Amino acid sequence: MSKRWIPKPEPDNQTLEHLSAGINLNKTLTGILVQRGIDTFDQAKQFFRPQYEDLHDPFLMKGMKTAVDRIKTAISNQEKILVYGDYDVDGTTSVATVFGFFKDYTSQIDYYIPDRYTEGYGISFMSIDWASNNGFKLIIALDCGIKSIDKVKYANDRGIDFIICDHHLPGEEIPAAVAVLNPKQSDCAYPFKELSGCGIGFKLIQAYAAAHQIAFSAIEKYIDLVAVSISADLVPILDENRILVHYGLKKLKHNPNNGLKALLETYAERPDYQVSDVVFFIGPRINAAGRIADAKDSVRLMISDNTDEARKIANLVNQHNTERRSFDLSITEQAFEMIEKDAAFHERKSTVLFHREWHKGVIGIVASRLIEKYYRPTIVLTESNGMATGSARSVDGFDLYNAIEACSDLLEQYGGHTHAAGLTLKIDNVPAFSQKFETVVSASIKERSLTPEIEYDAEIPLRAITPKFFSVLKQFSPFGPGNMNPVFMSKNVWDVGDVMIVGNNHLKMSLTQEEGGRIFKAIAFGLGEHYDKVSQGISFDICYTIEENHFNGHVNLQINIKDITFRN
Image (cartoon, rainbow, N blue to C red; front, top):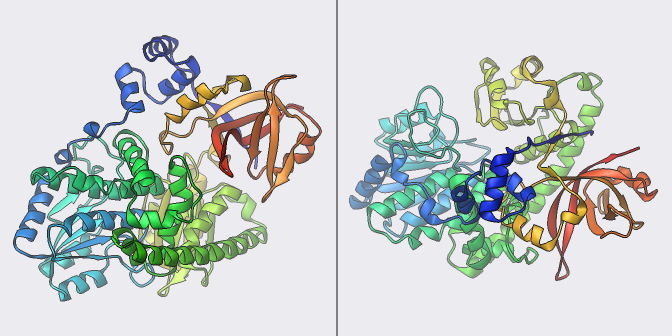
């Protein structure tokens, strides 16, 4: 698929000159800072040196004092507290964090993760019945609940109070909970709006600790779980999230949560962990439990204090992940086949697929795979409990949630974000929904959103890539949404003669940009179709990131090529 290369706007020259001199940094790297909204010495200092002291006061969040007071009352009165979270990474890390903290202050506490297949996403009536039958008086809901108007009322009628900690967009009506912690509420003055669900849970225990003179170390022990949630949930790694991920990844490396440590025993050694290690290794394994079996396995893993027990659960979670990958690959192939057999597909601006027998736990992953190949707003549906239920994924620049909301007359339930959502509808409504969704997307999507873009930060010559340059570049991490690994563009490079195809259609090359100049090792994932031209010595332009390649104990700088354009 062809991609469009877009340079980021040039930074203001006066700002660039002033900041470059102030922080003693070359103009290329300073320009990247300015592009990211960092244009003063103090902002640069905060960026390069994240500090716990810069975390926001949790009591700035609407409802926080009420939530802390209600929990204190429950603990003082020996009321039973239920910590409730969704079955994905954000939900399970949230539960492990909040349950793990409060179990040190009350024995009257338990946790609950809904079953993906029998209860579905979010708070369920079944869970409230279970809580009522078992004498719980307070439910702390994490990473869900902001739209559970009817469920909270149902609980209130049974004498159960709710505290909702959610980061999803609120609707017009807010549930009648004792407290609702969600910075995205229009009347919430909290200065940072992009916390993960676990991040809001962390702010809750931070507030409780501050109010009751509990040492910060009692909440710092959960910082790696918070970092895992932020990384896996793809929330912007800016402001407070940058601080939490910075310290969380350090803890993950040097003193990890017992369960995470057990998972990492099968992972290649790293000098430091990055967000990508969470996204591609830890996250899928934590998610796999809820996709294939029981998400409580992930919580049990992350709250375990026993090394042997943690290893046993980690082995189980790894087995779930192996099974998940098998489902993922087979269903993706079926989806590709369905699309290629559909003559009208290439005329449409959206993708909606329904198959009664697809595994519900992996359809979100399959939707992402379809985006990678066909690049259009995508919904993948399967049958569950007599309904069509599915996951949706979007392309850059298109608000998927709004498009789904425009089809709400055909839906039973939906929720999510701009780029990802979940939905449930009657099976008979699938054809009508597919048609209406296509109509909505076609009317509102911009043509440029149907072609993937590579936005690059700066054009540089390859000789600019020195060990000193890279040592500063590393300090831009942690990388993720809002602070992506800088992408560079270099023109007129060529392979010196050892290009080869490796793995699953990847190109491994040795590149130079000048006769007799320095040679750079490079990898181009999924770009094997360019082998013939590259092997002929034809010059080309590249968009790429710079990274360290770890192999057999050796560490080398490597160019990771995102796209190639030939000059002739």
